Image 1 (cartoon, rainbow, N blue to C red):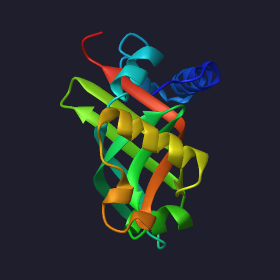
Image 2 (cartoon, rainbow, N blue to C red):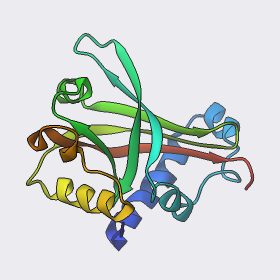
Image 3 (cartoon, rainbow, N blue to C red):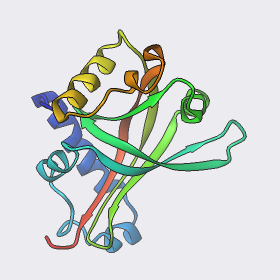
Length: 166
């Protein structure tokens, strides 16, 4: 999916600011800056659907995690879902979400941000639909009642990255 120059700049700022705000333990653990992914590395990685572990919280604040498909669309991450999914209710009440993508000990991307649920007619919904179609992935509108298809849009506030082979 194409990323506008403004979206690239926004993501680059988040990556830079995340590194600057991280504490000494995180910076040392992730061996920054030597082992941080570049913006182009991040864009290339999430140009495909990736299975991430998504963390949300119930109304009472109890944590919940689930493996979900995730794709970077512009400057936000997009997770196909359905209206009846518990994650939709949780994000509506508590929009703070996190996810992690990990390839053993060689690669990690951890994102903290705010989530929102979008449905048909929303510009972000349409953009996610086009991105999935370009990859040959079925729309969540095909998972039952077409009206139930939704996308969880995660706007990142913090992105931590690590790649061992850099």
